[in-house]
Image (spheres, rainbow, N blue to C red):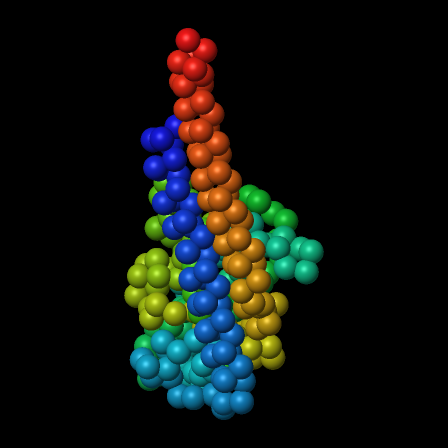
Length: 227
């Protein structure tokens, strides 16, 4: 029991602190989001590509490299989020989230047309909120488009030699599909709830360990008292 306690106690505390840190990060993002609402789109630069919620004016053309994130749901429909490489005249290759395409066909990827010629787009740098851990590595095929199971922006960008940032197309832009949401809730309520759960389990573990310790101590001393 002591070994179990020594392993689980720091683990539960670490999980609680991690959720508090995630909540603080969400609060910072919410403040950045509100600050960027009043700004006009900027010309893309390496600095602008690293600023969450920064709207950018892009000019260039699409490349055929396309990622399709499988097992997604939007407005009650199943399908894919579509990411495609766009080469901007100023900063080079960037990763554009064109939006959602519905599809119930599990055997074939949907046919998503690639616009030809030069385009002018307005897209917003979207923050990376972290990935849920998975068991084992996920293999990607060498051909295009690639069917993938989650939007790992860092890996997608490395695979396509693009800037490691997700740019979401705003509604009404050329080439946009069903637009990705721009109103994702960034509140830290969920993380505070998770933190309370982990810290609550920490208290339960401590009380249980103390109770068993006193109970075992009482059992050891009772025969001595009877003699």
